[in-house]
Amino acid sequence: MQTFPIYVLELGSELVVCFPGDRNDIGHSEFWETTASRLVAEHYKIPQRLLVNLPYCQRRARVVGNRVFYGEKPDAKLLRLIRKALGNSKLAFVHDDHERRLEFDVSEFRKLMDRFVIRRTPRSTADVFGKKR
Image 1 (spheres, rainbow, N blue to C red):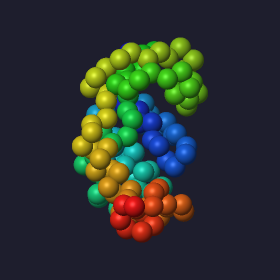
Image 2: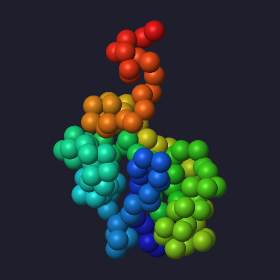
Image 3: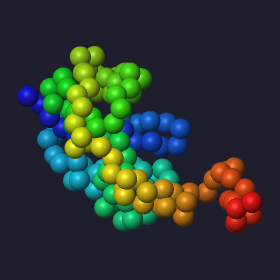
């Protein structure tokens, strides 16, 4: 039975399903370090070395046969995206807490976004004036 990791990368307003091209059974951390973090770094112009230790900052799952082990809330639209990316209409979500994002990693990623990503519109008046109003 084939098993491999996937990441659902939020690249701006686009969701991208990222997986090993050979669908090799490697660990999420290794796949994040070698591939997924590089895509995120390139998209957001964040140095990849700052992302390498945040493998739980983006949505992730593990495909085992026709099952997608996923730790977040299942979403039909996301499942369709994964099915299309992998070319397998038989895939189904199975809940797995291990595949959840970690709050710390998500928080650190947001800090990097605040530091490196130039936003076209401010998120709040605090962003404009540097203080709360």
